[in-house]
Image 1: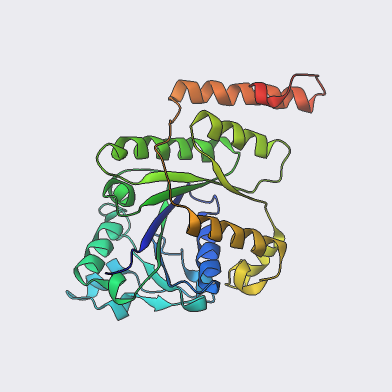
Image 2: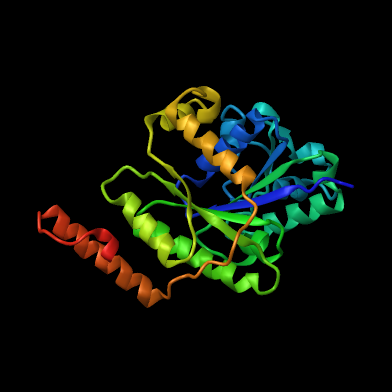
Length: 291
């Protein structure tokens, strides 16, 4: 009997640290002895470069534009710890659906039974989460990924994107789509950032999987084209990424979130804004958990 490959999708708005987080998860899992593929699903094709010393790799769509038949070896490259790196890519600028690379790459790998041939333990899809439509929704809609995690900070636009993702998961869950494993709280340094995220997940019926602080170690590592797990494996930041990776590896039960309606989300944000303004000006108020 063939072993079950655990397929995970990690979403997040552009610039939130999604690819940084995903690459460090992949590196940490590889250090634990797992066979991992990181599947970059952003048209920028920059998901895997810190696993390969800062080097970019040919994308599936770019390769298909040059030839009619693509062999796995032409689009799959080994990175740090033996992580298999793939970039789906996107269409030429201004032409076609940006998510088409995901659809094309997944179909290609299914036809060629790539995941089974490589004997993978994990496939991790790194997916742009600003929009949940078309190809970007494929890992959720088609049930390709079994568990979905979203990276968010306490900033409103990041939470807005996470809430949109929750709406997509809720919609597709009724037809066999992927379910939500939880939220990865990134850049949690500012006062009340943790409380804001905790309040949001409580109101949307989900959970925080890990809190990740902003760290200069991450910047230093990425400037050298590496993950923190590779460049500074004994650092506090690497230990947090390792903890997150092990939690995801052990995770088995995901569920349907309860996204807030747009008006409820705006009211929630407004209440927090008023609370933080009062805090900043020294006004005495009850605990933030009462929001």
